[in-house]
Amino acid sequence: MSIFGISDAIGKPVASITATILITIVWITTVYIKQDSQPILTLVFVGIGYAVLAIIISGILSPILTKHLQGPLTNPFAIVSILVTNAIWG
Image 1 (cartoon, rainbow, N blue to C red):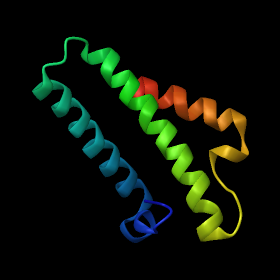
Image 2 (tube, rainbow, N blue to C red):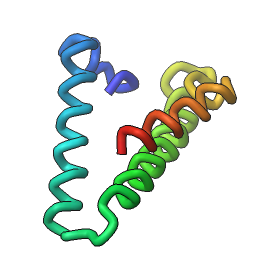
Image 3 (cartoon, rainbow, N blue to C red):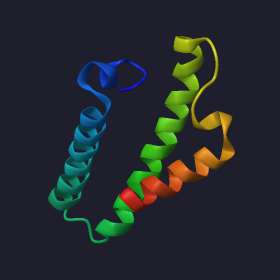
Image 4 (cartoon, rainbow, N blue to C red):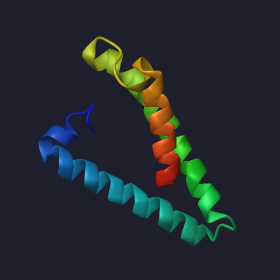
């Protein structure tokens, strides 16, 4: 959302909170409908997968859009932080 300017258009706190709530609802609903036998483990891995995709997308799009690499790939601590945060979120 930040890369495409959506966060700036909507307003950063509102956009981030709304996106987080919507993603959480989709994840929980999907696990509930699927009737997963290990929902917590599934959601942890979904969170990690989401983090990996966010890191990859940031690494691809930031040089294209800003002409230089930005985001977690420029800081190893950020990568670990994103993975852990999203695993807990899952």
